[in-house]
Length: 251
Image (cartoon, rainbow, N blue to C red):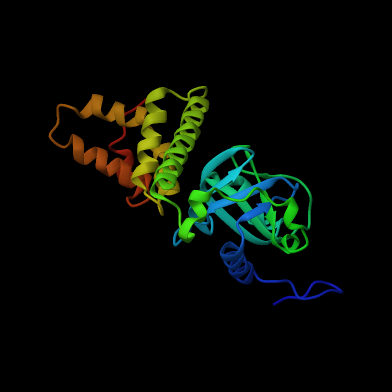
């Protein structure tokens, strides 16, 4: 563990993750770095793939409930230091957690949206009266949420996710055709959790217009499907580029 100049050793991110998990067992009504109330309705599950530390988390902030990822760093500046502000894979993050605040400012996603940040080091210093309101009785009864509360939570999370997707595709349609936007969305979905970004990149490299040209030129040949597969494999880097070019139609 490296030490800061003239100070104590810097806490590793693995320890911050453990501190966060302990905090979630004690208290989920928190305040973000700006002092605004925030509730972690569900802290999510550890992520075993590319992206943020916890997935499928649910937070309530500024009167809205959001479903997404939670990313943890030792310091707030870790968000930019790790390049998350340029990575579309982190656009699903709804909460940034850091041990200490070494710089002011918002936590911005690649799509330009800002998300709240929680500073763990400051939680113990805040008075309980400044924390967010207590959870509903349905959530406190017997230490577990009621079925009705869970149904309501899932519905709100689904609505929030749907609204985010609508906004995303609406913005895309300003720059690209509807067919390409739909094609990119299908490709990203086919990547599931671990390969969303590579599949989306493939949709950029082999756009729908290219595949349509191949179909127009090769639709009468029995090998049309094989050619399409070869083009996709080639654009993904699994075939020699010279071999691939022989199948591509001339502009």
